[in-house]
Amino acid sequence: MLDRRVLMNLRGLLTPDPARTWVVDRIPDAALALEEGRVAWLGRAADLPAAWAEAPRVDGGGAWASPGFVDPHTHLLFGGDRSGEFNRRLQGASYQEIASGGGGIRETVRATRLATVEELVASGAPRLWAFRERGVVHLECKTGYGLDLEAESRLAAAYAELKRRGWSLDVTLLPAHDLAPEFGGDAEANTRAVAEVWLPELVRRHPGLARFCDVFVETGVFSVDQGRRIFEAGRRLGLSPRVHADELSWTGGAELAAELGAASADHLMFCSEAGMRAMAAAAVVPVLLPGTTLFLGMRDWAPARKLIEAGCQVALATDFNPGSCPCTDPLTILRLGCLQLRMTFEEAFAAMTLHAARSLGHGDLGHLHPGARAEVLLWDVDEPLELVYWVGEPFRPRFMPNGITERLKPQMTQVAAEEK
Ligand code: NIG
Ligand code: FE
Image (tube, rainbow, N blue to C red; front, top):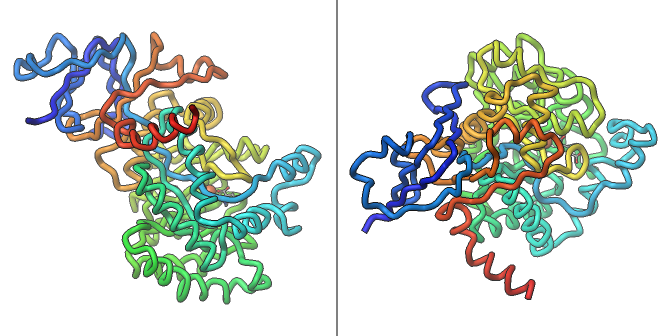
């Protein structure tokens, strides 16, 4: 027997249209027909095809339905936190000053190297629950706070365990997140270690786990040429590039992403116009991270409007990490997308659903058209724009059964038992 259900009693349904880049469908009095955990039909309830007349009903409770959010850029796993550094920044120190004094990413690396796989998993799980209760159903997660083979391997093992527990994740290897302290600033030697030893060994130890690799291409970290060599090594191992590009200064990261046909170029606060045109031509997804610009107290918001006008399918993400954006909230990112990046509500919504999913190669996430995975959020609002308009309101979606909630049921039982 096929599992068929119809989600009824919806005030409306909001979904990007995968066939039309920036179009977001808004269907009042909607219904959604689901078969085997996938969308089979969407439309007005009054138009439900007769073939669905007998299928079991699920009551939407008068909510607005939307696809779950996808977060295409997080640094989910790390040890420690950086609240001390945050306080120093509040007193005037800059992010770069702290980093060049051995703090910043390096501070997190010291804490992460002390963590066991079990400790990393134990700290990651509540972060994933925090994302989930805010409506994020799939995340990209990076290694990168190990900066040596063994610690990077423990991060990969922890991601493998979280995936085994049912979390929907894509793993990106980022052993080139910063210059490792052992190389004493020798970026060339560090590049060779990453390209020739660490990436091949991480893929050998964790076969089939990672789909992407990433490099922090930045002044004082890895150059464009060093990034290119690391990405080419990753490609030979089956990893497609995602680039930390033009985040704190212009280095040509966007141009490199275009040259490599990368899956994404991320940050882009200092992206050049030539880089924008090159990314559009190469279909690289620019992933914008306005939470980071906010948290670093910068004024250089990524050029979302210019990227859209250049023809790019812009995505939004949190950049969740302990130093530049400790934020698990997709609505905060949507609000910054609208208010600081000057995106319309529909553009920001498509950017954190459809385009985010596409940057990860998932055509069946981020929308609710036929074939999509039934990752459905139910929002108790009169009008979806309220999610952005009530700017400090901590809206939480309800989840349509049969999606992520079902997959995580064993864990939920365990959590409930531990709470008793
Ligand atoms: O995306 N740019 C590199 N990585 C992070 C920051 C990491 C940190 O500060 O711990 C980012 O902003
Ligand atoms: Fe990042």
